Amino acid sequence: MSNFTVSSSPHVTQKNNSTRIIMADVLIALAPVVVASVYFFGYHVLINIVACAIGCMGFEMLYGMFVKKAWNKEGFKNSSVWDLSCFVTAVLLALNLPAAMDVWGMNVYSASGKILFSFDTILVCLLGSLVAIVLVKQLFGGIGRNFANPALTARVFLFITFSTAFVASQTIGLGIQASTGATWLSGAKETNGTVLYNLFIGNVGSAAVGETCVIAILLGYIYLSVRRVIDFRVPLMIIGWTAVFALLFDGLIKSSLTGGKLMENMLAHVLSGGLIFGAVFMATDYATSPNTFKGNCIYCFGIALITVLIRVFAAYPEGMSFAVLIMNCFVPLIDRFVYPKPFGYVRPEKSKKVKSEKSAAAKEETK
Image 1 (cartoon, one colour):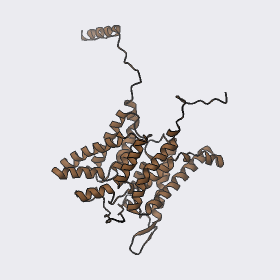
Image 2 (image 1 turned 180 degrees about the vertical axis):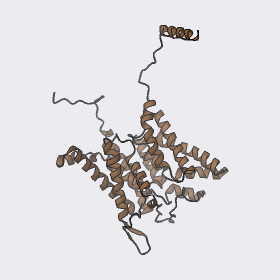
Image 3 (image 1 turned 60 degrees about the vertical axis):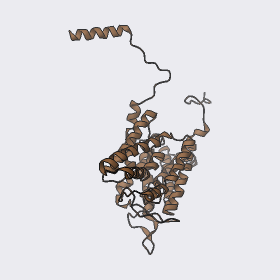
Image 4 (image 1 turned 180 degrees about the horizontal axis):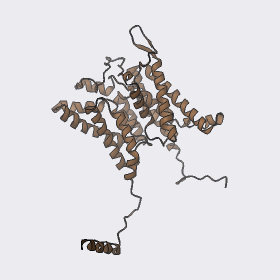
């Protein structure tokens, strides 16, 4: 009997659908976003990715060895870091941060006052890695058991902790005119063809370097959709509902726009902030999104609604991170009440005897 292995049905292993393959696909999809971020914001982005990768890998490996008490070669080989999920978290976390931050003043500056090397940002990356891997992922049982997206939760934690340091990074102007440090959502919200073009290509200031270049994000979206890693309908539903709510709440109710300005304002809402990046890479997380299409419809509706309400009526200009995190907490409730009908299930009809007894009881109550 020791030679038998107990496994769940259908007892078929699909090599192309393993956790490692899925995580590798996500990393490939993130590659264009990384390239665009480095192009627009400079080498600081690469330093942040390396710092987050070292932090996420180190914390996950140390936690696994500590829990299993396997401080040896076998513990190293059997570590969960080899499924690549920690590296996905690392890249997502780094792309959700500014290029360089000034928190404790431990930075190296040039004569013109620009940051050449930021020790502060590296420490912030390591702190975010600790929160994402240990507090959000591993303490809840590891991959697939976390209640919220680890990178997104770490980003919100860092923003609340170091809110004054989350200043929008300015693009460095390689081949194009450099942007200002302000984002469209936190600025004057001017809309014209040039503004929409810059939002589309990524030549805008941003407090999250990975959310600016829509072209790069769309390339990742197409790759993940073709590889069937994500449900291609989820990002489209979030973007569609956001456009509707932006048109209603900001364009008509708050700003009272009409004609072309109304449509330009709606497009700017869709292209700005972390909406498309979050819709493609955050909201589609397997562990923190509903298991049914109907559940995902509710999930996407909630993300879009909360995002626009925060953007339009709250003091914080961007709400995508908070919206996804809030809806992550509602996913267990959605899955509880929205579930698929079992295959071949037919609702049994009530027998005539039961119906007659209920009707008789109803008549007695009326008497």
